[in-house]
Structures are given as C-alpha cells and as structure tokens.
Length: 89
Image 1 (cartoon, rainbow, N blue to C red):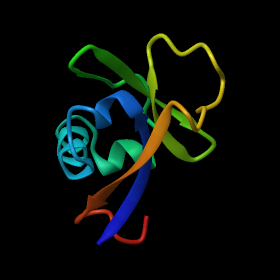
Image 2 (image 1 turned 45 degrees about the horizontal axis):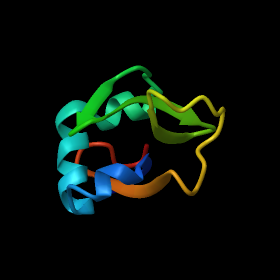
Image 3 (image 1 turned 30 degrees about the vertical axis):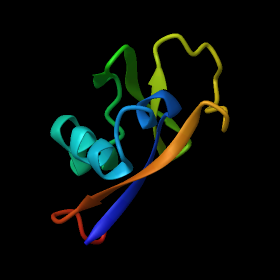
C-alpha cells in the first residue's frame, strides 16, 4: 500500500477528523490523478472551498481565497491518502 501526503485547509479540521478528510479526498481525487499531477479538482467542506494544486510534488488543496504561491503552515495541515492500487508509484 502506498500513501500520498496532501496539504488541506486547517478549517476542515474544525469539522472532521483526518481519517474522514481522507475519505472525502478519496471520493474526489484518485491516486492516479495525483501521480499525473492533475489540477483544479474542487472540494468544499462546509464554507471552505479548495482546489487541487501542487507545491513541488506535494498535492495541495489550495483555498480559493488564498493568493499566496506557497502553502502557509499556519493555514494548512497534512493528511495522508492511502492507496491500494498505486504501489511503486
């Protein structure tokens, strides 16, 4: 089993545990899309919408209102997405 670290908005942590956020991410984003660096996939958790971007190789669910070109550690935290079908990628 492989895993991908993904940065998500801290606001999401107010509503769900990390394990639940992983399930939400896996419903919308596949490991194949992460490996191919597909961008733009949007997810809304309560009132915070974020779209898939990358900071280097790191998947980053960038908040729509975030104008920075990098993920501020005060605004995002890491969640792991575990994949059964992308071993070796």
